[in-house]
Length: 111
Image 1 (spheres, rainbow, N blue to C red):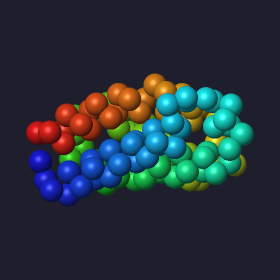
Image 2 (cartoon, rainbow, N blue to C red; image 1 turned 180 degrees about the horizontal axis):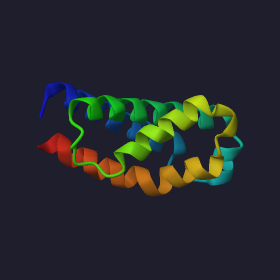
Image 3 (cartoon, helix red, strand yellow; image 1 turned 180 degrees about the vertical axis):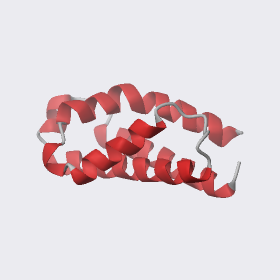
């Protein structure tokens, strides 16, 4: 695997870990929804994940990560559709998609 791809995978892992740190172990949606600073921090990390994935796809479009296009599309939605970002959708991504992405990225970084 190219060094550049590993760097982007590392960036994705850092952002996932940052989101988990921001949310904490209580993972309370209502705290998330009522804390603008927390929401903006999570949204920024999602932007970083999407941008890193976009750069990876330019180098290796066959990377072994599911939903790569959706990850990039989510980044675009958060950046360009900032006024339409839905807290429930973001929370779903945090709860359902990030744990799976973390596993995939961890496996690739171990190779």
